[in-house]
Amino acid sequence: MENHVSRDEYERMLEQNKQLNLSLNRMEDETSILRALFNKTHGELENIKRPALLVAEIMQIFDDKAVIKLTNGNQFYSYITEGLGVRAGDHVLVDQKSLNVVERIETFSNRDVERFVIMQKPDTTWKQIGGLSEAIEQVKEVIELPLKHPHLFEQVGIHPPKGVLLHGPPGTGKTLLAKAAATSTDSTFIEIVGSELVQKFIGEGSKLVKELFAMARAKAPSIVFIDEIDALAATRLETGTSGEREVSRTFMQLLAELDGFKSLDNVKIIAATNRLDILDPAIIRPGRLDRLIEVGLPDIVARNDILAVHTKGMKTKRVNISKLAAATDGFSGAELKALCTEAGYGAIRDERNYVAHTDFVAALEKVGRRNIEEIEPMFG
Image 1 (spheres, rainbow, N blue to C red):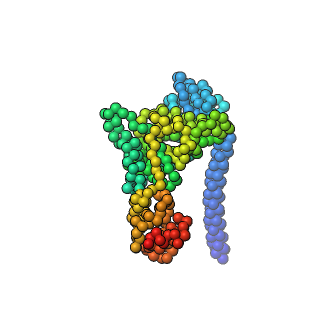
Image 2 (cartoon, one colour; image 1 turned 135 degrees about the vertical axis):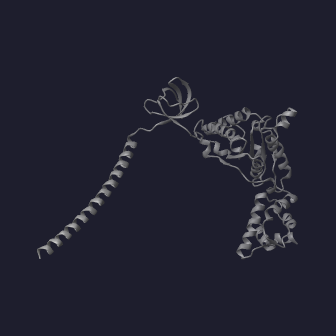
Image 3 (cartoon, rainbow, N blue to C red; image 1 turned 90 degrees about the vertical axis):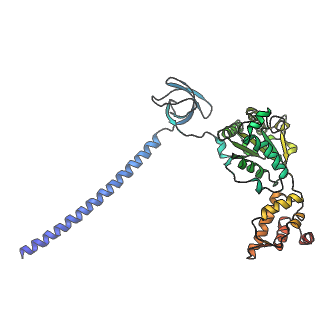
């Protein structure tokens, strides 16, 4: 009986020992997790306590010291940490109190203008633009030819225009022309709206203009497209508010940049405006944007070409493009594209896989804001 009790006791003790080992392992795991959490929290606390470093640019180097320039424009004579290996033009981190250089930044973009521009490699081709044959030829002559065959100009001894100004009503294809030029020359397309260059703080606008052209040179071959340039380059007034004076300063910087690069550089400027009448003559004088290209509303032949482009991929039945072109007098290229899109929606609403004459009639009534009584006789 005693041997039997001892065996039970022994088994109970083994079970208790097993449970204790499990508890010990669990506590060790929890301790490890808590230790890692403590270390992480301690590290975050140390980072919070640590003062932030300032970003600066190395202007000049003198042995173990350098002239640095902070982002606010102030310059200081600071010590360089031994073995750092920096050069003039590098961006570095400096201590807040001593302003000594403590670390070099390998890649750092100091261009605020990147927040305002659209930079891309477009895929728009000349074939996708209908009704603008004359404008296309002029853009090819001024933008494409110097970028692709600069030797022709060097042989003859002339300098091509640095850029062009596209002017005309909204929606006539000015942006498409600029994108197609970038595609045909395999150039980086940098697009910015003129109003984005107008900033409220003194000096910010001119800084953005300077950075815009620096970026264009770095990304060359490139085409800079400034849309709505009238927001920046309207006729200057003798007096005005501080905001108007800042616009004038930004505009003067734009003129300085245009004067500062060579016409055969791999950077071309295309500007666009709906208000040629209010532009300052200084922007279109010889040596700047002296080639003016009008991109007006399409005539009936051009409308026929534009509609052919936009209906090329559509399944249509009994749709007469010629009569449709005649019925859309006064339409811009953008409105003709919207007309085709709206006609396509009519087919989708009726659960058809083709676009019919009635779809275009309904679209004309909606997009062209015309009554059905006016539209039907046009197709007669």
